[in-house]
Structure formats: C-alpha cells, structure tokens
Image 1 (tube, rainbow, N blue to C red):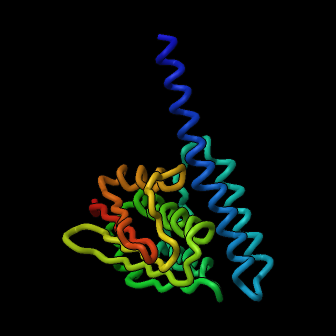
Image 2 (image 1 turned 180 degrees about the vertical axis):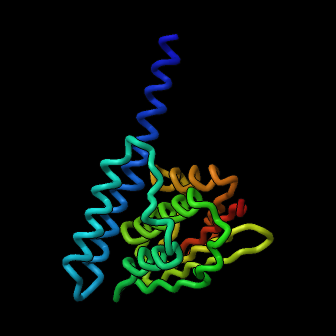
Image 3 (image 1 turned 90 degrees about the vertical axis):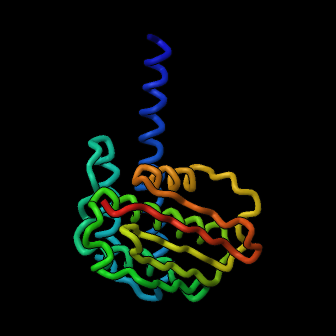
Length: 196
C-alpha cells in the first residue's frame, strides 16, 4: 500500500514537472526568442505574451487546456514559429493552413503547439542550425509534420526531458515520432498522428 502511494506521488510529480517544462519554461523561452529576434517589438504584445505564460503557470494545477491556442490555430502556430526566425536562423513553413486543422481535436492542437515549441527551443539552444523547414500535411486521415534543420544533428539519440515529452505527447495522440539520426548534416524528425 505504501509503495503504491509513493508511486502515485512520483507520477504526480512527473506530470507537473513535465507541464512546468513544456508550458512555463518553453513559454518564457518563446517570449525571450521573440524579443531577441525582432529588431523592433511592441511592449504591450510582449507583456500580453508574458501574461499568457503567467496564467498558464497559475492554472497548471487545474489541468486546464490552453484555450488561447485553440482559436485561429494555424495563425497561432505560425506566430510561434516565426518568433524563432532570425537573421541567424531562417525558418520555412509549409502547409500550415487553417483547413489542415479543421478536424483536429483541441487537445491534439495543444499537444502539437507544445511539441513545436519544444523542437524549436531545442533547435535554438543546441543545433547551431541556420535553416529549418517545417512541412505540415494531411494524408490518409493523418497529420504528418516533417521537421528538418541543417544543424549538428543528434549522433547518439538519448531523449532527455524535452524530447521525451515530445514523444510522450505524440504517443498520447496514438501517433509516432521518427528521428532520422543517420543524417550527418542536420536533423530530420517525422511526426505522424491520426485525425480523430
């Protein structure tokens, strides 16, 4: 009985640790990246973005879905991705159209948003890439996301917190994450999940 309680506490700690990492830490990094990569920025827009991260951090214990990401999802995703675009790193976005997300459930959109935030944060922190291509498409009732960059790649794939969370999030959508580690010149990741 005691061992079950300890296991349940550990599961709860892991759950909240994952949320803090994915939602708060990456949200703050997203805002930092936005400030760093824009020569001019609107103070009120930055404060609004920080307010969203603040609200997310307060609401973590309530297990609420981030509703602010659900409406105009293609636009919100494009804004997230463009905040990582800079003179040093050019990001090319293909296929992120409103129609693509029409039949995708809200919880799946939230997971995709957090996965993209994680991939781009890792790219900026670790990859040394100067070019990133994100290609979104629907095929056979599945969403397929192809990520590629020309950075240093991953020679020995041992996913840590962020990449583990990415794999876990897509697995929860009955999907799969495929890392192409054979590619010496950069990184390629394929994410597939069914539209349900």
